[in-house]
Each structure stands twice: as C-alpha cells, then as structure tokens.
Image (cartoon, rainbow, N blue to C red; front, side):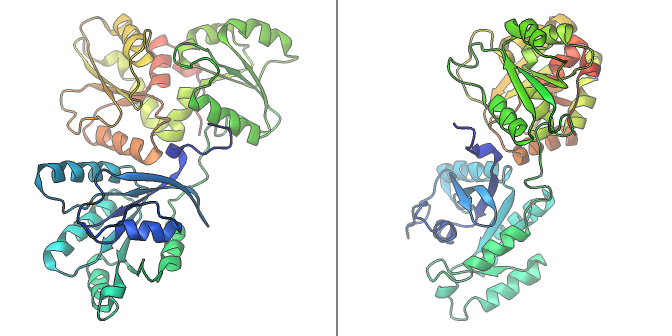
Length: 402
C-alpha cells in the first residue's frame, strides 16, 4: 500500500439491502458506472456480501457492500442472511430497496429501515425497478413514504432513472463529522517536531510498516509537522541528534515502558494504538474502562478481540504479551479468551473485560457497534494501547487525542 492509498477500513461504507432480485446488484452497477456486481434473474445470485472499493463523485473514497437477499431460505440461506446482518453493523449509509408492495415483503424491508434507524445509521428507502411497474412506482412510493416517514427515491437501474438524485441524497446523508476525523487530533500542529518510535519486530515484516504507522505518518506530513523516525534501540541517539526535545513522541505500545523512561520531560507521549482508540473507537469509554482493570476479580474472564485473522506468531501482542502483563498484574487465576476477525460474541454474559486491538482493518462504524454492545451489557472495554499503559501504571502520563 502506498501513502496515497485509502485503506478500505477508512472509506465510507454504503450498503445495499433488500430481498432477492430486488435490483441491488443492478443499482450498484448503475451507481458506479461499472459492472462490479453480477446481475442475474436467478434469485440468490449474490451470496456472501461483496465489498467493492470505489471513488464516488461528490463523496470520495467509498466501499459499496452488495448483500445477499434478506429473504434467502434454507440452512445456507440463513448463513447468508447472517452475513448480511453482520455487514449492516459496518454500514455508514444504508440503501434499503423496495421492489414489491406485497405485505410480507414490505414487513421485512420496513423492519430493516427501523433497524438502521435504531442504530442511528442514515438510511435511504429506494423504490427500485420502477421501469417494470405500470404506474412508474407511484403507489409503492406512497406506501413506503407513509410507512417510514422518510422520503424514498425512485430509481430504474436499467433506464438510469433517479441515479443522480440518489447520489445527491447519499451526499446529503453523509454522517456528521465525515472526513473530519483525525488520527492525532489536537496533539500536534504545523511546525511541531514529532518523533515516531517504530519497533521493527515479527509483527512488521522486513521492508514494511504496519498500517497504523503508515496512516499516522501520512497525516503528520499533511499537517506539515517535522517528522523523525527511529527504532527503539536508536531512541537515545535520535534524541541526542535533535536540537530540542520533540513536541510529541508516538511509540509502539509494546515499547511504552522503555520510551516513557527515556523521554524528555517536555515531550508529550502517546502510542499508535492509543491514537487509534480515538480514531476508530470511543476513547473516553476506553480510558474510563482501563481504570477499572485493577478492580477486576481474581478469576476475571477477559476477552481479547483481534481484527486481523493472522496466524498467531511467537511473542504475539494479543495472545502472548498482553496476557503476560495481565497475569503479572492481576494474578494467574484470570481466564483469557481470544477472538479474531468478525468472530465477536453477541452475548457477553460472564465476560468481565474486553480488550480490542487498534482495529486498523475495521471501519469506525463497526468498532463502535462493538463498543455499544459492551456498553449495553455493562462490560468495560478498552484497546491494546490504553490497556498496556494502564497495566504499566503510566496511563496518566499518556496523551489522549481529542
């Protein structure tokens, strides 16, 4: 990935939802002006959600999610619907397609509109395939308008009708704060010297930086900061080479102890993972939760959630290093489970604490859906960087971005 690439997790996620053969794939092709989705008269052509990264005029980098029909049937169909439900959790703007005014069909579609509204996700009802309707979709438009109290958009992918209006409505519905999120927040500004301490271990293969380091570096350059980088073993030499202490030091959380001991008193300290706690999650909830760590029971059940599905490596941070710190601080009677990818339990009963990775592979919407589940079930949740700082007893010395 180059510095100019926009990772999928940082793109606006636009999901298309509806019953089988409601025109989702055709609409996606019409919106993008490309044949990015397979179109067929056979119901159930789209199985698992299809993610397509695009540049959409007026919005910028987006990811379209073409989902399976939520009326899919059978055991396999139920699995497909579950994947659709999972995709809904990472959707920033939802397009719910109505193509039939039959009561049983409308009930499903209306239920999805209500689900997105409850999740505070912008949702646009779309009356599709109007070229196949005798009245041009007028009756269905009225039914949808009355049932949802929203203004639906009528489209025909085949005739390219209503596509520009739908695109304009998507721009109008952009989530508040879109494109305003910052990784480093108020921690630095133009002209500040920022030192990046980037250990190159087994997690970062030779010749590569991990994604949070790349994204943070790009933002600092855009902010016109003066950026220097070093590995942990070269920290002393780098600090000596500077005329004055750096305004901010950003380190890998695994090097917190070393960098905290060596940093100049004038320099502010944070980590890539802490920055991503604010960029991808709810940093205030994470910080408040971390202060509850020492109050956990001796037999606490702790869930560590990784976004990546990589093969576990020796000295893996989530499976080895953090558990080692937890047992050193809380005792060896604690129980630690690890989940990876999208394998996150809906029922958190019995879980006393959740520790999430930096989530560079997830979009913020999806991470916040997990935060909300923890909050709803009264389970404290934090992330790697903030938890490590708390376990080392230096959280009060670490800067949190806002």
